[in-house]
Length: 254
Ligand code: DGL
View 1 (cartoon, rainbow, N blue to C red):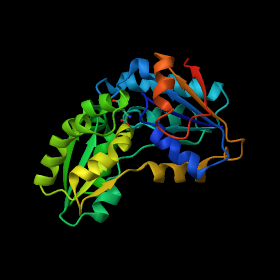
View 2: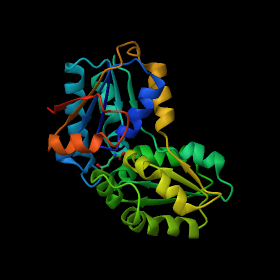
View 3: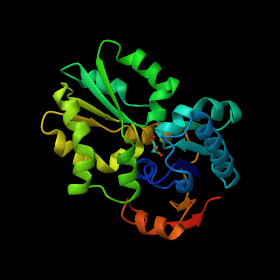
């Protein structure tokens, strides 16, 4: 079984890619909605939540853990790997490398959470792959709220997302990096607002391919279990709109 977690609904974008890359794997997903958002919390708090959820996933049969959350990856990947050296653990890394390879203007914009930008992982990634580029960073907490409320498109989504996109385009960015898994659900709106000639990069497919490579849990019955903290009925209502999850079992976390 492959265990996957996020602060909320965002990681379902990664789960959908994992489903495509590993169609027969059994999947167990945790949405920690009660304690969301993670992106405005301290890295220490998010690390503690991540270690706790990892233990729960392993106790419930997961053999591989995917951190489908950039914030939790920034906060906890090193500690998770140290605590569970025998478990394949896959995390999100902001897609700065492909963005640096693709940009023509030399200007990249990364949209993520405040905590992700505070983590060492982000600085290391920029230093390693995009030292000679201009990297614009923008924390977007309202985008997370939008997705958690189930709004991905339309006038409300455009009003929330629009200003940061215009700012990035006006500054010369031709490559936009989705550095928070929630933002994948806004990708069509972002791409439309950004216009032709602007690349929007979502690392979720690459993370799903990496999961398929390192996991020993690809052969299962294709079962999906979605666990959530917080209001389970609300969660159930929202997830049916967010991927192929109509047949999923929905259970409380913890
Ligand atoms: N989906 C998360 C991420 O990728 C965090 C959103 C939040 O809870 O602030 O960073």
